[in-house]
Image (cartoon, rainbow, N blue to C red; front, top):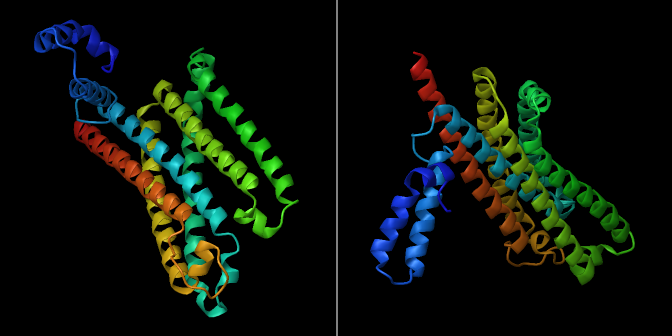
Length: 303
C-alpha cells in the first residue's frame, strides 16, 4: 500500500510474488520493509509530478504550486514566531544603530505582504474554476478539508482572545517566560496555529488537484507561486540581516537579559524559526524549479 493504487493494480501481484521469492519464507527485515516503503513513496512522488518527468507538465506544475504553498504555510508560521520575538526591538538599540535592523524588519514585512498579495491573486485567478467546482457538485471533495481548517481557525481565534485576557493580568516579566502556565499555554496555541496553517495548506492542495484550471489560469497561478518563492527568499535574507545586527548591537535583547549584558545571540526559539524558514524556502524553491521546468516544456511543445 505504499505504492499508488494504479501502480498496485498493474504491478502489485508481480511485486508480491517477487517479495515472496526473495524472502523464501523468512520474515522481512526492517531494512527490507524500509526499501519497499521508500520505493513506494518514490513512485507516489513520480505519479504526483513531484519527481521525474513522466507526469504531464501540467501535473508537474500543479505539484510545484503545492510545494510552494506548503513552504509558504511553514514560512508564515516562522514569520509569526519571529514577529512575536522581535516585539519592541528598537527600544533595545541606540538611535544611531536602528536604521539597518529596522530596515531589515520592514523588508521582511514587505516580503510577507507581497507573498500574501500573490496568494490572494492566485485565489482570484482560480475563482471561476472554484465556482464551476461548486456548481458541478465536486465541492464534496473539499468539504471535509475546509471544514477542518475552518474549525481549527475558530479555535485559534478563541485562543487569541483568551491569551490576551490572561496577558492583561500578568506583568511584562511574567508574559515573557516568568509564568510557566502562561508560557505552556502560549506554546500550545502556537502549535495549534502551525497545525491550522498546515490544514489550510492541505485544503489548498486538495482544491488545486480538483480544480479544472485552463492553461492560462494555471500559467498565472504558476508564475504567482514562483513570485511567492522570491518573496520568501527576500524575507529569509531580511531575517538573517536583522539577526546579525541585533547580535552585534544588542545581544541581550535576543536572550532576554538586562541591557548591556553579554551573552549568546542564539535564542533557541529564534534559531528554530530561522531554521524552519530556511527549510520552507528550500521546499518552495524546489517547487518553483518544478514549475519552471514544466512551463519550459509546455512552451517547447507549443513551438
